[in-house]
Image 1 (tube, helix red, strand yellow):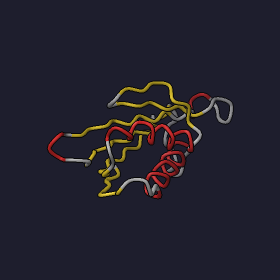
Image 2 (spheres, one colour):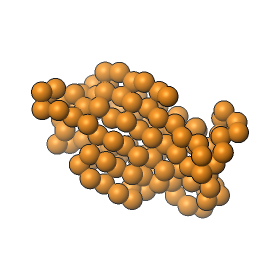
Image 3 (cartoon, helix red, strand yellow):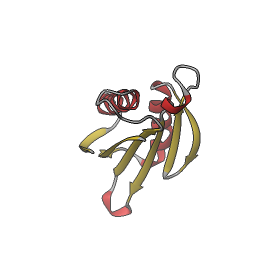
Image 4 (cartoon, one colour):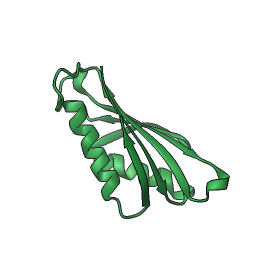
Length: 115
């Protein structure tokens, strides 16, 4: 199973965050299949790649009242594909999502760690 994880901190009003994250995932051509205040799951449209290559993206949202508008996001991109090559389909989708997050001008990007 291929799995790529990015942890980032952004500054943005929490009341508007969910809608922005949904918009970003939809920009990356993902369907939203589950959404709560602290968790969003998106899935790639079926038909473009085989089923085992379909990428699921989970976003975990963590914020504290003492941190103001600072929000921690953990983005996990995964699929059933064996990552036999460094540049596989899951990694390509993960890279696209990270680039879209980094280029977003609506929030202040504070830091990012990729594992």
